[in-house]
Image (cartoon, rainbow, N blue to C red; front, side, top):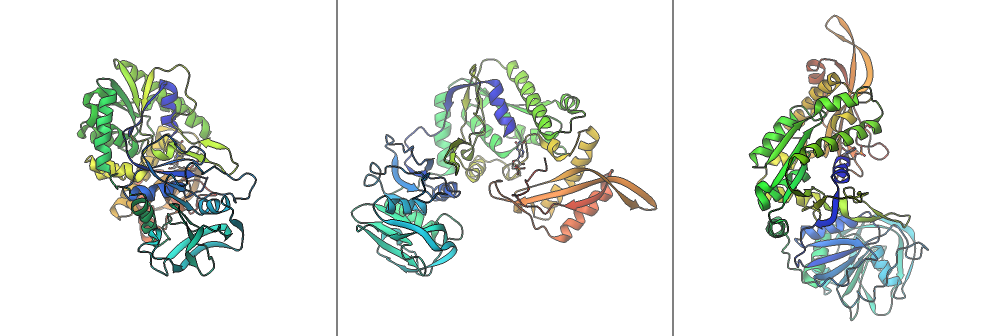
Length: 530
Ligand code: XMP
């Protein structure tokens, strides 16, 4: 993130941005009242091959003729809280089909005169639908007894006269309601979460059955329309793109390459903190994908600037600035470049709402842009979730190992070497890391973890090898499971695997005599150590 943000800040971006999808794509709008599961609702709807957009609760696109339905998300607030996010739904209800989820349902009822009160016993976790009105289109093919996931401290205790109950659990009478004479529904449970057994069916009932969604959103349709749009918008203009080796920038590059071919130049900078042989291997991958790519080995510059620096934030700043310098130098060698392309994806762009009620723009890539701007921004993936980016990559014929590659921090191994950085420490870490990562692949574990790597600790410990006493470095293995890096658990890797990796590292990596396994989750720890 940091590197991408810095490229923008440095190269300078014009306010003109090329988005994909300005064509008429029918959509569901998800009004975000700040719930942690809002993005998940979006993903579930997209999984139904239905395009959707998440917008802040008070920014409904009233003038957009392509909206076919509206979902109101959950919220960290209670409807009766002073600071609760409230919105006038009079222009929305009656005009579009509406589905309120959790707070969304409570708000629909409460704002029409129903009552919402703190639940006697807070309603969290699994529940079962004990009765269902199977004639209601929202409940089509949802069997009695289905598991649903509850997560609310409040509950609807009475609904207005024109509302009627269409599903109940043992504890929650108004688990779901429909509004008579209106295409409006509410569910107090969360159909979007994995544990709600027929949650996808319920969302399908709404999106397809009720809203009439054509389900024509797919990786292939996205590629066709985006390539056509990029061609039309970019014409013969030249575009430069910074590759990181990660999936987002790689897919953006291949997509742009399909649209404008050699008018796209990619720059891949080696700051010396990449994984073992990664610069060489990834460059080769890029070339075999037909990309016009310039690989710049700037490792000496970075090692020089990082010498003696131990503070993590200083390391990050040095790498960020150095990266920009190198990128800019190369970009300026190109003639007539008009656009900077980036692999920004949807979660980077969604305006999220914090529980304090302040609107935060979590758009890492274009925040704080300078006034003086000389390149326009092109972000062809800005409306895609990560799994959709991968689907697009596969559809574009990219190799699986590029698509399923673990996330890797922009400053690379620099934030995995605690303390100052030397080429020797990088060599030790690269060797240990490559044993761990290759081991994960060989044991079929690579795709089961979100991200993994080795940390070089700033401690030495006593060991014994043969008859010799050693006093060498300790490393920590870190592997986590996660869905979005916001929270993570340590991966429960098999002991046999950990034993093998430990053995291999100690035997093969000169300078390491102790291996530990990090069993901290996030929060309270973070994924990276620095
Ligand atoms: P943390 O350590 O905050 O990491 O739990 C969350 C995710 O972000 C990655 N990360 C970074 N990515 N520049 C990046 O591009 C950075 O400075 C940086 N720091 C952490 C981390 O690898 C994980 O995927």
